[in-house]
Image (cartoon, rainbow, N blue to C red; front, side, top):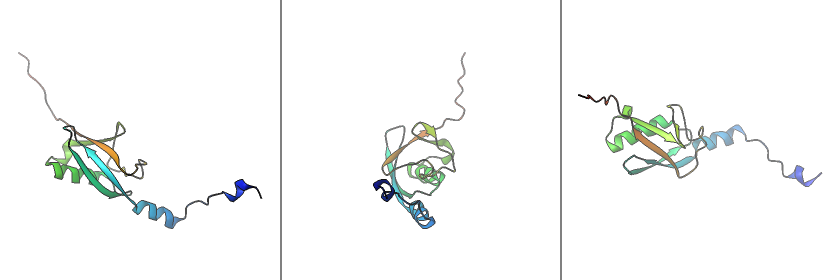
Length: 105
């Protein structure tokens, strides 16, 4: 038997996968005005819940806030696990403006 065969790592069992999804991560949400809010959530938590908690914390309507991770929009079904987020990663929070037309004379 070669040394390479001794180093084979078995695939994760369902219990190990389940345990990983229950693991928590610390996430920083950075607002456009420079404020930072820190959250500790499970890797399996949908980030729509985090967006709602952030909106409450900063006093904004949840429908006006968009989350970006590494420049990509976060969807309601995304989780830290699905985005391969690590401890102390950062999410950018943007306030989406609705309307805003100007009248020129």
